[in-house]
Amino acid sequence: MSSKTKTLEVTTLVSILLLAACSGPAGDGRSPATNEAVERESEMSRDPHSYARPDEVAVSHLDLDLTVDFERHVLRGRASLALDNKRGATELHLDTRQLDVERVTLDDAAAAVDFVLGEEDPILGRELVVPIDAATRVVHVDYATRPEAAALQWLAPAQTAGRHPFLFTQSQAILARTWVPCQDTPAVRMTYDATVRVPPALMAVMSAENPTARNDDGVYRFRMPQPIPSYLLALAVGDLAFAELGPRTGVYAEPPLIERAAYEFAETEDMMTAVEKLYGPYRWGRYDLLVLPPSFPFGGMENPRLTFATPTIIAGDRSLTALVAHELAHSWSGNLVTNATWNDFWLNEGFTVYLEQRIMEAVKGRDYAEMLASLSLQDLEQAIDELEPRDTHLYLDLAGRDPDEGMTDVPYNKGYFFLRMIEETVGRERFDPFLRGWFEKNAFHSRTTADFVAYLRRELVAGDAGLEKELMIDAWVYGPGLPPNVPRVHSARFDRVDGELARFRDGAPAAELATEGWTTHEWLRFLRGLPDELPAPRMAELDEAFGFTASGNSEILHAWLHHVIRNRYEPAYPTLEHFLKTVGRRKFLKPLYERLAETEEGKAWAREIYAQARPGYHAVSSSTIDEILDWQG
Ligand code: BES
Ligand code: ZN
Image 1 (cartoon, rainbow, N blue to C red):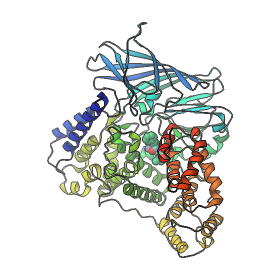
Image 2 (image 1 turned 90 degrees about the horizontal axis):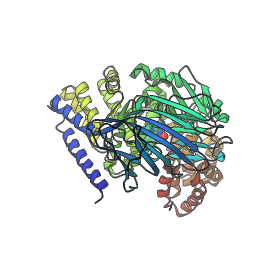
Image 3 (image 1 turned 90 degrees about the vertical axis):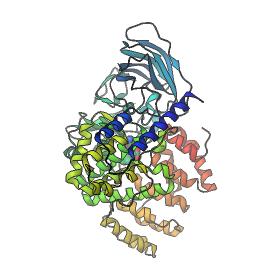
Image 4 (image 1 turned 60 degrees about the vertical axis):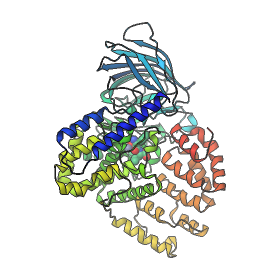
């Protein structure tokens, strides 16, 4: 048995013991002392997705010095890791994957030390073991990345809006180790400084204090004074312009996009005001957005001080900006209080969807927010239908699996509805300060599910047996599916859409439906509610009346393309093909390729498209699509 398998088993055992410890008799007479013991124990439980041993020695600061080589698709340089050696450890265990480690030195010594690189695990990569002693302050690792490093995407000019190449990173969940040797676990936080050398025509930005203009020598210096976990390390290099949005907010984008981006995100400052009012001051200085080229595999990534975002949310009418609210909200839920392991992912995402909803309600009104909530509930119910029951618990067991597998609607939307259920049960007067207290008391720390459950029982339930029973905490957190006390969502605007859907199903021509004033989310409700089978004339009628194939709104187009595939609506095939070849956002690609793969013919066509599109996708997306299409990468 490899030592890695052993580690995973031990960790699983620890999780099981913890789970048993936490799911004792509900509302119970568990003493505060026991709660604290559980908390302490859980904070020390080993992350199954990291080789690091931060309870022995932790990295507290990172100094990066990197040169960006666009010709060879390589980052080369040095990572200097400052240590907090708590127990006089004689070894530092780091995570690496797809890295060429060239030399390791300690403090000011010139002599290299003998490091050991462990065997390659397909998910975790290779452990790097560096001999140190109790007095070692800094470990310097000289290294280079590989062109195929999973976090990095190197874009040719043709994949951008302009005439220059582009590079961006995506470190979450465990990809930071493919471009920086580090303790790649969300349980460890470090501050960082970086020097990044790029071709002088390009500008570099990071999840740190950023420049707003290009400089002529191509050398950029960054400082991140707040401690962050490794998955929030981020870098982008390209031809970038900057536009101010408000006193503390701005947007970076390629020059041809900057104006449209600035218009789209103009409400960012209002969102900030709304969220600060609820959960306390923004702790990170500035909040800027970076609009990436369309191959960015996610909608958004909450890199501190600088959210990375897909250009597919630039709809022209500010209708997809809930994503900005979401990534901004992570400045509290995730970046300030961080999930201790990826099993606790719902502490990041479920809390963030909850905050996102509160922000959208404050900025756009309750009606609007309820449309979002209703769509989320639909997504969640479908996901629960399709997932293995064990993957529908809030507290996940991802040991031995890629943490990516935990990125389903469950942590996001079941997490959201759990918090909303508590809110509705106790009222906002009690719930808002409770949640604010969670962020304030745990700021700049990593926390486990058990920590939150203990806090909830201590601060909110506080021995009220009736309340304990009403909340069904254990069923939500450690059980499958949706407990019976799931909140009801009601949207009058969607009721009207459903009325029109019924008329359409009964044969009313598309052009006669009362759709005036519908916003993006009403259209999404409509598209989701259409019958699965639509004959060609009905498809054509819908398209003619509402112009779906020509929609510039990526969410609407994506929802429509499902019907296009299902009903073999050929007039939209060129649009489908173009979409798959230009957009790299996994949330869109995965369901469309899955839909295509449902038939032999569809799958054959999908493979043809994929053969051309794949080189333009980020590894995060291509690894998912490889599986759907049985692609031998
Ligand atoms: N942090 C996530 C993205 C992520 C999660 C990347 C796990 C890698 C591993 C980000 O905040 C997110 O949730 N993005 C969503 C958008 C959001 C509005 C639901 C996305 O990209 O679709
Ligand atoms: Zn998120």
